[in-house]
Length: 213
Image 1 (cartoon, rainbow, N blue to C red):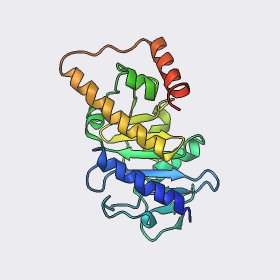
Image 2 (cartoon, rainbow, N blue to C red; image 1 turned 120 degrees about the vertical axis):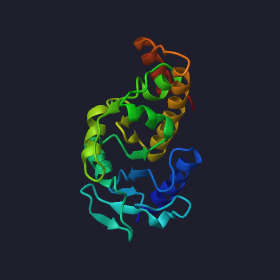
Image 3 (cartoon, one colour; image 1 turned 180 degrees about the vertical axis):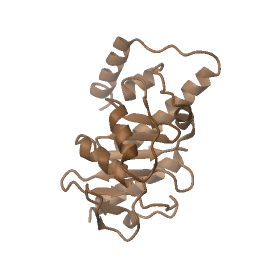
Image 4 (cartoon, rainbow, N blue to C red; image 1 turned 30 degrees about the vertical axis):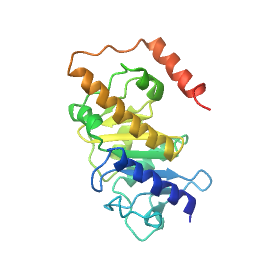
């Protein structure tokens, strides 16, 4: 079932350790199949180097396992909550990437002080409140705080990113860590200056509607 999506998720999961976004078994990627509405997600506690396409778990939007012999991620309920409340989202990523999570540890958003942040995220990367793992609580925080951004920090926890595809969500996860590192480095030298809101709007519009092929 959904073999093409499992294969895609397997390849995308490998991008997380490759880009330094996760350690050991932490983090996960999920994808929603637009045709069936079913969600494919990483199994709980499986290391990335031994993960196989067939290990991924298929669930419906209510959390019932449709296919798979392994337990789905402990973040499944929150992924599903986001999908139910954001029909435009078909991919979700959760990481504990170090620089972005450093901001989350302080409960601080990442200010929009770089063109790269304006391009990808359209403004500051917000920080949601604290929530425990295992229920819909984290998903509720994501929905309440992410706004129009592709990323949100979770206070004292980590990062969630979303996209119209799983690949777009993974790209956002890579980018949020990249800009978090740059902003952190800048803060070692002094205060950062946020971009003008009109400049942010123009940069984001160009990047999302003009840039690329």
